[in-house]
Length: 68
Image 1 (cartoon, rainbow, N blue to C red):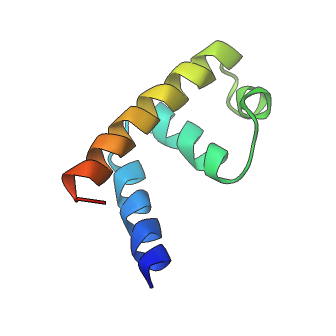
Image 2 (image 1 turned 180 degrees about the vertical axis):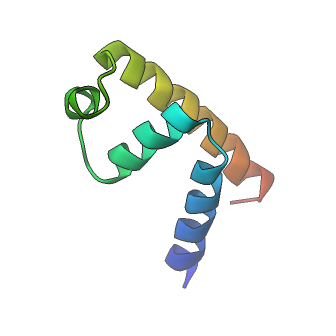
C-alpha cells in the first residue's frame, strides 16, 4: 500500500518537471543508463547527467513538501 502511494507521488512529481528533464527521468526509471538515454534522445551524456541531477533535486523537494 505504501509503495503504491510512493509510486503515485513519484509519478505526480515527474509530471511537473520540464519536458527534457521529465523524459530523462522516465527513461532512468525504465532502467536505462545515461549513455543509452543520450543515444535515445540525441543529447550529450553530460546533459543527461545534468538533467537527471536537476530532476532529482526537484523530486526531493516535491516529496519533502509532502512529508515523504
